Image (cartoon, rainbow, N blue to C red; front, side, top):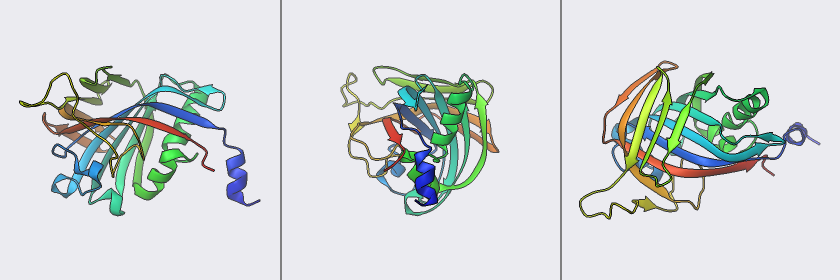
Length: 222
């Protein structure tokens, strides 16, 4: 038995699922989701995660929130690297905190176990914060807030020829930030995007990219 096999034996079975959305500096629609370089060749973005259901072994993970702030130049799907900072939910108990850090730094498999090693250049820090992540059941609006640090929100995309009761969606995204998925990408646009943490400082104007994708991850990998 090699070291990797021994390590996997110590990782409990886990599964988390919920809502993911971003607000970023790209134009609508975000080229990254189509596995293309970002608008203008660089991107500043915030990723928000709301875990609706899940467990890490016997640890209940429902209700936990996570925020990742990223910045990069080039195309992450072609090997260019991102700088990132991670906020984990301060409401988590010690077992939940450990599970969140392991999952979202890619140490226990799942999508992040693939995405983090291939895209992360610099992790500027991990901190715990009071995180609010809200997503309308109708997917009309979504927002994320960390007091005095993050205030960002988006709304569903519509236009003069669209039925406002229906969402603008696409399937089978070639560059899904939550990994391979059969769920719909719901396209939106930013209302506001302000954050200042881990050396990142952004003021995204209204009308830039925002989108929602459900995520559903499990591990450890076989």
